[in-house]
Length: 632
Image (cartoon, rainbow, N blue to C red):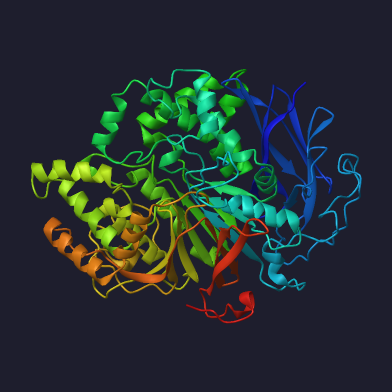
């Protein structure tokens, strides 16, 4: 008899119609999975098989716009979710209002846990209170009130639970959020959760996972205690998603994800020399193929809309095959060998908010004479995704696992190091630069200077013109602390080659783009939040703080002169932080207003709690969001 092995995860909710969603599950054997909602919406999908595991991504149609409805998962006629003994609230799907519509009046759920299956209404939590979202449907009963979206984000979650109950890195922010929302179903909920990389750690396994690895192979042989193949990747997702509170949270809050290095290996695709060294090892090919296969199954598919899934030839081939393993293996191997054949980046729309999630790992060009964060095709796609139809959004979010703007000293070190590796100071300095690049993880946007300059100009362009949004926010993680920084465009500073990437422009008559031009009218910010559950050594904390200091800036300028790097097209200062701890940021976007909060998970006598350490308005009118002015 088939059962539910992992999930459900609520992934995609359609913000254009408010009537469609996707739910991901892993079953214990081949079967047909049904998602049945209290409002009559439903969907079914047969499982597809990869490496002895069985998955389904169920498209749920017929949802009621502007409502919150409970749902169940059935295999055959047997309910497998929620569990019979669950103490958690019902899993729900919340849909946005259609333009001009009014919210659906919800009814309390009955006591009978099977009421959704037999057609009785189970909209909302059992106490009759409606969960708050999407962004409280505009916060008003008026159909003219602007609808909004609440976006929570973070990265770097090492999911292993402490064996003795004492967690040396502190409470897990995602677990703490889940526990709070489960305890108070009427509390403010995110409308979407952005997971910005390092959802699993293939190169840093827990004691429990190592025991599972040791049961199937010799850990004295490479890759040792790291992940070797697809089956072992499934252990990581088990560990990450099986916690009861997190499982419930991911079944109720839609999520978007993108990988970072630890999803495959530390410093993934740092340089051409790094790649040659790894490809020479006997274990790397299986690791990278399995890493991309598992990412496609567990994370990437749920990022896509039903229309995108229908148009995806790999998805069609995997579903059509009795066993999709070899189809997916070929795809993953080709994606690693020729990254231009695959696009992991994607675009999502949440009302008047546009999200462009950018792949900053697999799309790189590593040859030193052509080094780029994004290959030309990827860069053109990102440019189009950002600039197309600018009048259709009030806020632009760009998800980049790696921060665009770092502490100035670290930025200058990475730019200097890239120049050394390119040979600006000769071969001896180039060899030193490569060693330093790997040892110090010098591989963010600043380590790809041309890409940094082009991306900076793209953001300036996106924030300029008569249709400019109110805010352009780059959302990042990776660096195990949180901070806010805002760039400023010195008048007339040159941006070499900023306009050589093809794609639409707001004003084709604007010229060559070799000068940065006027400052944007939109507020442009780098918002960095990491980790969700991890740590950073005290020495590195001190280094990050020093990177913002005046002395650090002076050292950075000296390195820039030595590396002959020239000036960056923008200057920036720290607007907030650094904050260290397990944390999540949330953007609340309503109309052209924007507000930001930062919460940290802290241990207390009553258990882990989320403590607000920042509430800040990003636009002048945001007293309506916070109830008072906190503009920075």
